[in-house]
Image (tube, rainbow, N blue to C red; front, side, top):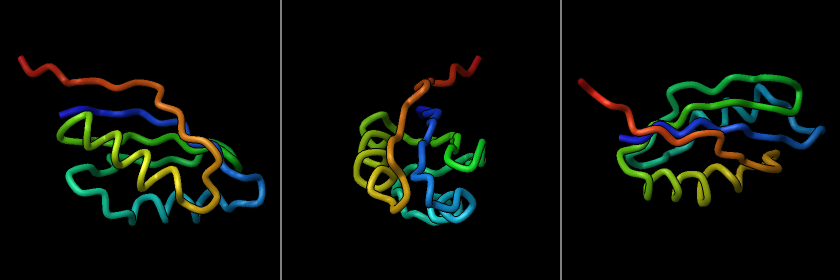
Length: 84
């Protein structure tokens, strides 16, 4: 399991709430959004949980980045949770 924390920048003309809803509805295989939050009119933050880092890369590059209104997707952190 890997948790990827994303900072997503949007076109100024994009509606942040609509883009957030679109992201939540994407089919991402073995990845799912734990949360997508509107930070500002042109910024979102999200937590993407995936089975592997390879699946996370595929989801970000092939599914999330091409969404209409998304200008840039930044990975702030990728964490492998430690279970004790």
